Image (cartoon, rainbow, N blue to C red; front, top):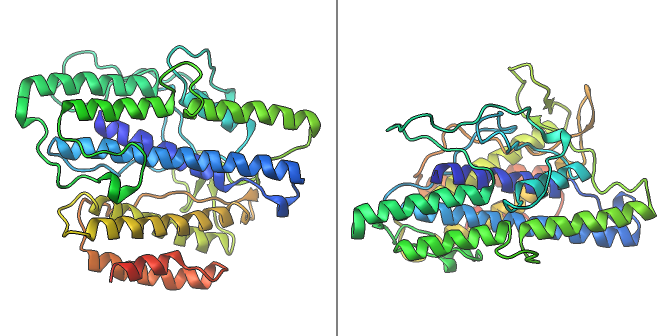
Length: 379
């Protein structure tokens, strides 16, 4: 269930970033008032995505505390129906009214009367609930994200009751608040700390009390209300570029509807973006290994630099044509590398980043090169 939670948080933050990357600016034809609103929405969505990074770190801290490893692997987008419960359809789609309603549905409290928009209804796949007790690790169903964490908290209490002081065994390999700078991330040393960290995750998402103004559910709902007012004043208002729906870097093999990115320079830029994302995942996994004093903070800083570079690539892709067969634009696909593992030598990571930094300098306009800064910080 911790692996399930890690993948859910990872998928959510990628979906949120994709929507934010697609959003327009004043240079794209927005009025001054529209620009202020859209910029505020972009900041809010990226802020939610950053908090999802904190949730992912919290889940991985608990996994490591129990003696396991961090989990950064996940299926590539779009996540196939039934991989998560049927109520969770996770895709890469540009920012739109339907996308926003989908985000509200995903972050909803259990008692909120929120319906999934028709564009995201997966057709009612069969539930994954186990029909009998099994020794094979298997994820259970849950109606909401808060419900997922309810299961985890219940199972942690059972585990702690069974194992006692042997439950939480590894504090030195976890990501600390000082290393990450992420709100709510804490080193897990006991059951109370684990339960408090998970409670924080749920409260940030669906809200701990009705109407909690800073929860993800409340933030997305506020954007929806402001959007309605904007559309009343300008029925033609469009907040985002026509970025691809379910883009892929390689030729689709299953016959499903995908946008295969083949146009120049989008295809080359997508290749770079996915290479940066893959290197970033390797670095994040490395953060949970035994490291020398100061090395974890340096690695975390380099990871943040890569995130800045990835954001620039993602924004550029949403503004570039996708292919001759697709009338809209491209988009970052967040492709997970097959070689993703729990450990890599820092020198090898730095060597990889130096290569990507040269490509970044050739393909991305601007004086700043965050990939180069990340590479230099590790050497």
